[in-house]
Length: 82
Ligand SMILES: [Zn+2]
Image (cartoon, rainbow, N blue to C red; front, side, top):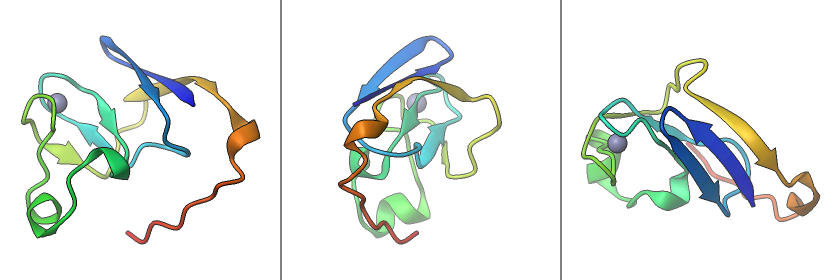
């Protein structure tokens, strides 16, 4: 469980690690791989599940900040190949 803050949003996520995508659209949220639909469509043309804005994997510095990260539960390490 971690809490991440973006412009205008507090995001409570059960995902471990840093977000994989950031929304450059109106909501400005960040997303983890598990939050996004998988498949060629999302890879070729990633769109935000919230606002439909453009998602980037190149998250701009300062786009989000980590409020709380429970490092004690990091033992379930996942292997995501990008
Ligand atoms: Zn968005």
